[in-house]
Length: 325
Image (cartoon, rainbow, N blue to C red; front, side, top):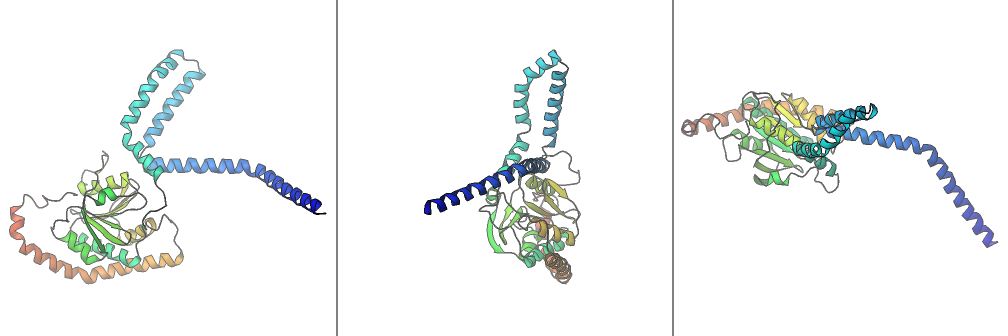
């Protein structure tokens, strides 16, 4: 009796596994196509973010030429392509080394053991308020919000602060010509990690001529990492965002708040109605706070500039010490 029960149980388990195998055989083609489509989409997204599409287009053109030579039996063309392909591969690796480096950096980034990038709405208000105040006074600002890729090498170039986020601290760093004014501030894990940091400059040639070093630095940081960079122009007062190798120029405070909340929310691109209403209230509060405190910082700025007038006359040019504009 026991042996028969044991045998029937084994038969039931085997039948269950057989049914699962049959179901898997039915859905396997769909899973295969879906996985391939996902990988192709992620690969295209990766190439688009790293500005490596010209590399893929060039490789595709060579493959097309080689295919034509093979189909039409163009012996000379096939021989030429066979000879130059090894050297061409080495040349492509050398010429597109920055793009290839960005691709491998993106592939190596992960969600594990990384610091939290979420910034509390109240703290984000302080950052946007400071940006508005500095924009009104035409004072440059550069703030980096790291996401997945570690920016320890950038932090080490500046002065570590590890302070709570406040608009008064941010304004005091960028409003006056202090030792930390010329660099970038890094905000990570809900705190001001460091200030006076040096950022890599973008080597792109299609940047607008009126963009200074500050905008090139923000774009360079966005090209070499997945960080979000908030930048205020010292010439025009325009507030901009750089991320995913692109620069979005002259955004409104509401747009800045919305995009920062979206980009820093652990990669989540969809906000609930509660989050959306909170962001709207956040933008309104930021504007009201800016209006209330603008006169205070304007008075502080005017007093400081009058006190340091003799230092300004001794400097060569108005912005001779600025690194990022």
